[in-house]
Image 1 (cartoon, protein in one colour):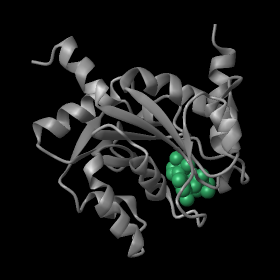
Image 2: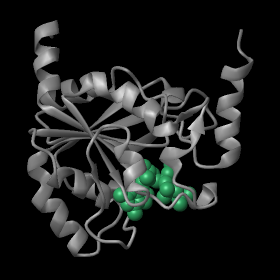
Image 3: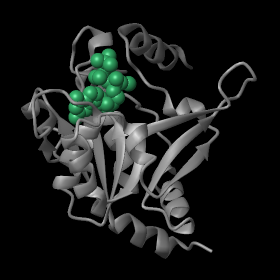
Length: 214
Ligand SMILES: Nc1nc2c(ncn2[C@@H]2O[C@H](COP(=O)(O)OP(=O)(O)OP(=O)(O)O)[C@@H](O)[C@H]2O)c(=O)[nH]1
Ligand SMILES: [Mg+2]
């Protein structure tokens, strides 16, 4: 059984990487992590949720690096400036990670679960995997029964060289990469916690309930 002490020591060996290196095309090309949600930058919501779950937090961003640095955590851009996708952000995170594990989360999912890291870590250890990925379970019959949430993953830092090779060879798809590893998919039934904000309409619609709530 997992005690408070083992959970605390697990936290010590995990760095949290918030990936904010995208172009934000669907939001009109803005830097999504810096957009305000209920008066606070989206990345601030992610930092607040993730930091209690890890030893230290780092940010991957490709624009407005000084603005991101103002949140008080180290900021690292992708190795190249070709916007190669989230795996390039994970590569940057792995390069600057000094713990044996890295957990990743995107900057545009401000409601991520408070038990994300603990559940990914437990599944990784139990299954003797090198990588654990969150998967959400659909609540209605009409949706796909499960949906991988691959930007939410916990991985061993030792996968860094293999990821370098995959990117070097032109690999870009995060699912294709993680499926080549010893991986485990970890089901989460709270789909709302993984809500992803990609457009201005979505940003406004998630702000509204909080503003109207009593
Ligand atoms: N480091 C890095 N992260 C990226 C890149 N492209 C996307 N991401 C990140 O991957 C995650 C999911 O991407 P999207 O939601 O599609 O974000 P996006 O690419 O900024 O948005 P769109 O341009 O509208 O697709 C977010 O955390 C993005 O910041 C990239 O080229 N480099
Ligand atoms: Mg997104």
